[in-house]
Image: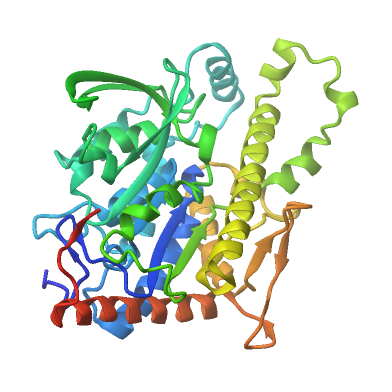
Length: 426
């Protein structure tokens, strides 16, 4: 593969920001990761029209965060190949899902007895899937690549069931504390409870100047941060180190692209008709029997808090830095009541459903840009102030690509003119 001319990413070093810090965040959602994969492919294609066919998203984003299936996509976009370029182009990720999802999530054979056997196993016999195919696939894909080697900074959460806390893996932390295999991080963040077994691994760590072997017992980061939008904020000071006046000049801007995998909250609420009266007599067994209701409650609550926290952070940031220095762009699909119920599932991997998810992603590009109301949780259209009308996601991504390209060229120009004294580790 030819080296990208003027890439702002060289190995695991990165040039400091000029006017823009771009951040990419990708939700979890199992097979529904197909939806953001179509958005990413479109964005990368727009960048390639501006900067050449070898341009990759890792060259343009300072931080990429992802949870569960989003964490796997983040790794695919940033793990280095033999030429120290991203392992996957964005337009290859959709096909990856189409090729492998049916083996990661094998579907039951039709028939009453097969479904009855599967139901009994799901209730008392362990996780729904053994995860062996997924583990082997991720190990083969990422090999011996370690977290510190990603071509731009990644942030991937998982939850430690032994320590009872959310653990945030990041490229920055890998350089100073522990540096696990990227495959272990991906397997961990994808270990959704009831779907896959927890993942345990050990890694050498440096804690308070002492070397120790740290054990992790991890499940899907989605139990705490299925929407990982707020995770990168803590890394902004490190990104700005090479340009300490980035914000004080009043011109620096943080641009966040947050990609959802589809929201089924309204669909599930309509389907279940869950009320206080319905759940009033549920004990432990009642909630277990209604596992979908329980996971939907937690998932919906976590998502609402992510939107609320992000809105609060953005509001404070705009108050301190100025309205024009923070831009948040969320692309999300709300499944409608008349949609096939399989679409909102995270593990129905039939060819028909996977193809339908591809169409959802393609159609989402044509839909208007929306924002989440922190009061109602609903997606509301946004009127673009310059256009005087709703902007489509496709139009916004074209604009986004131009901003990314311009920032990359500014960084390279500053480097060529000697305006940068050093390259910063991600």
